[in-house]
Length: 307
Image (cartoon, rainbow, N blue to C red; front, side):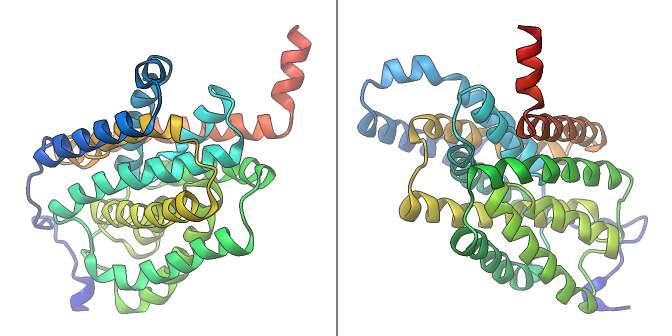
């Protein structure tokens, strides 16, 4: 048997360590957040009074992103478009910044638990970054592209999540023959994520589970780490180079993702993820359908009809 693709026997499990939810660095980073918020935003009390619900949005998005590897963009993009009237590209940029914090917070948890096949990172991270550059520099996101792709990609992510519910997988790592194909999938995921903020984690995780039988938790751990890296890269590009991030809103989602990101791997070690993934998958399909209808103008026609 290929050593790199060692099978996990029924009475054997991948060695993991228990993760505690609370960590001192969460408090330290929260204090840093407070300092930045107080120093960089005028009238902080008034701004907080208007936008504090976004902390809860950030928390929910980070939990979903780190339990399923779909990404918090599933929550951030439609919330910004429908509830806060942010243009699709602005919503996308907010999702990048929020995910950079939330997915990193969750990724540290998956890494601490030892459920990330680190040997695969050298095959997946470089093509991921190439893909992110393609969707950032060559075919940059625009409102039509974001709205046109977000719905179908979200529906696909939901369907993949449902399809992988019963796939436990038996391998701790992928065989050598899988490395080239997983690199191509990571490249594709990097391109898609640059346009809709989701895709990299769930697509790679589903591919590894469905095609090569990678252990489900290790596939999810890999997906979360890859989406974290992708989100950090894209957040830096859009925050420092392209601009246009709605920081007055993102500052609140970031705080929520800081605390919500760690909840994903924490919950994963105590409870079966089946029910949670079922709920999130259904939400993803409904979410994507709503965006598709909105993009097609169906929702506007229905509102006009009922008026």
